[in-house]
Length: 542
Image 1 (cartoon, rainbow, N blue to C red):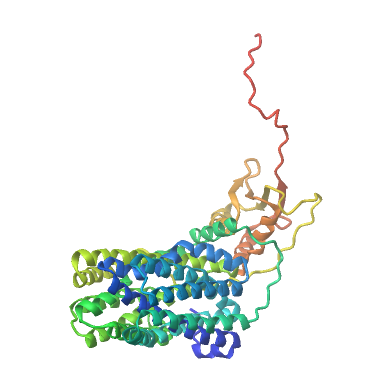
Image 2: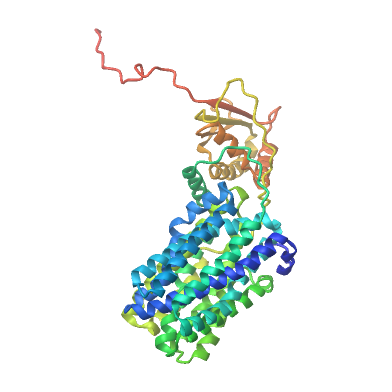
């Protein structure tokens, strides 16, 4: 468990304070625009599905492009990426404001432009979340995530109400124009933020290889897989409230855009309370029970919202839903960051967002379709049952507690002296490590070597194998391949202090006179291309 500190202590860091304040303004504009887009769709569309797809259009790009954005975040200047993303969204919002003012917006045009804005967020978010580890110490990441959630939800408590007022008095076009000007706060803050470039010891990882490395790291990390699965289910089920809330406001309680904004504001106010209570809740409940309670509270909120016919009652129901929403999502985010080393954190965060926002996009479409067929009230009742089932999934996919492993790089690798003049792209490289293990230590050796295998493969090794000598049974050889010499060096630079503990356990089991011997070999063909052809059958005389 990470040490509990007050989130407000993070404001002592100038960069965090400046960026957090600017994100407040950017979040306000985004929420005002969201209200405008959702309410405009209720005016120009005749299908409940199209209204729900407004929510899906902003979350679907995260599912599609997030991994690529994560690879960029780990291999490029994150500040430049965020600036490009903000400029992309500014242009899309400006286009949306112009078309809305001209009265030329169609449902599919609205979805296309909100999808483009979602692409900007998909590009921005992995770099934004990964940058937290560059701005604040690792032990304060939980507080940074909580404050970022608070930033968004602080604006969610007032932004939708402001958006509803703007839409009701001046129309959706002005809501879009309002958002255009809000982008400038974060653009200016990012422009003024001067990052210290990290020394580049290795060439930039190829883009396709970088994405593969991120995907491989998650697949070989059981705890991360559990977080991804739970966040997918959470997004799929919990999004029903946000996806159908415009219809609840319009059809169930007979409200206007202002009522919709107020209801969203109460949801956001609940989320602020949830962010402030994160420390206290996690002192009482384990991570698994935080997630289970979030599912159950949202299930109860959906059940009560299905029967509510009054704005005031719906607002009261939405407050605990906001608490549960931020508690679960911030917990998923912190768990991912504390379980991931810095070299791959952007890609892993992007995959987490792909799972969570992919679930939200699919859920928005699913609940919209169901609302068309069954009505809003019945759909909310069905969703409450689905949320209860989502909480029970914890019996199989239990949410892990925060990792206490030291995932900082060891930075103690030195390239061996080579007698061959290798180029960085020379390869393939075969690596073997010899161990002398007593028979009594073999069970423990195999247990530790299983951990070693996972780390090797997770960090880029291929064709890993463990061999035992048939003539000298105490000799064991770990063998693996890497495509090139530079990838071998990169593989070793990824070693963390937690990985070094596994190496230390293996060395303690080694009984040789000298430390385990590592050998590096380059594969070479020993026959010509002509000689490598299949031999023709030859039948000689007997």
